[in-house]
Length: 360
Ligand code: MRU
Image (spheres, rainbow, N blue to C red):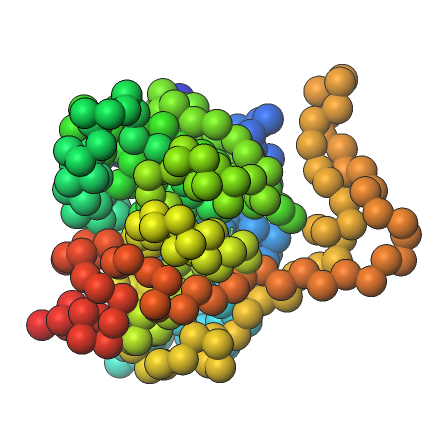
C-alpha cells in the first residue's frame, strides 16, 4: 500500500463486517469519509454518483457488486451484471471486470457463487495493485531517460497531467500517477502541473490531494493554461490515464485530454498515456466512431461544489438558470498524437502493431 495519511486503499473488503469499504471521493479533498457498500444497489449508486471513479477502480468495485448481489441471491448473476454494466458507459474496465465475473461464475452452483464471487473480487483487487505498480515501474524508466537529457539544464522535470489517474482512480498506486510515484522514489526531482479538470474538478480535488499526501511538488492550473505553459517551455512531458483505448491506439480519457495532446504536438512535447492492458478494448479500432462517451448531468457544469468559510460543503450556481448545457465527460485523442502507451508489460507505440505485441 502506498503511504498516505489515510492509510487506506481506495477500496477494500472488510471481512469482519462483510462489507466493502471505499473512500468517498465526492467528499475529498475537504473530508476523508469512509463509506460502506452493503448491497448491489449501494455499489451501483457509488459508481454512478462517482463516490468511486476512475476506470480500473470502477471495474474492481463492480466485481464486489457482483459478490454483494449473489450474497443475497445466488441466481442473480445475469441481472446484477446488467445493472452494473448500465452504471457508466465509457470505461471499458467495467465490462472487462463483469466479463471476468461471468466467465468465472456462470458454471458455479447457486450455492457456490457467493464464495467464488468474493474470491474473484479479491483477486481482481490484488491484480489491480500489482498491475498499477508495474505500470509505475515501466513509466519511471521513461522518466529517467527524459530526465537524463534535461538534468544538465534544469532543476526539475515538469509533468502535466489531466483529471485524476492516481491511486484514487485504481485500488492503489494509480496509472499516470504511479509513474510519478515511482519516478520520485527513484530520485527524479519531479514537479506536476495539475489541470483542475472541470466540471467535476478531479484534478483540483483528487490529484492535488493525493500528490500532497505523498509530498510531490505540484501546481494547480486552470484547464486552459496548459498550452501556454508548453509554449513557455515549462512542460517536459504530458502524462495521462485512459478510460478506453482502441486496438489501433486511439485514447479516450477525461474531456480536455485531446486539447492537451494537440498543444503538446505543436510544441514537440511527448504525450504519454499510462494504462493497464484491461483498458484496451481489443474489439474496436476507431475511437471516434465506436467509444460510447458519457454525457452527464447539466448541474455539474452549471454549479461548483466546494467548502465555504464555515467549513461546510456548498454548491453554488455559476451560470444563468436554465442555460443550455453540453456535458460530455470524455474525448478521444487520436493515436497519431500519442508518443507511447505505458502498460504493465511494456512501453509500446500507440499503433496496431505495438498493441498487438502486448498480447504475446
Ligand atoms: O469520470 P472519471 O473521474 O471516472 O474519469 C477518470 C479519468 O478520466 C481517468 O483519467 C481514467 O479513468 C484513467 S484512471 C487510472
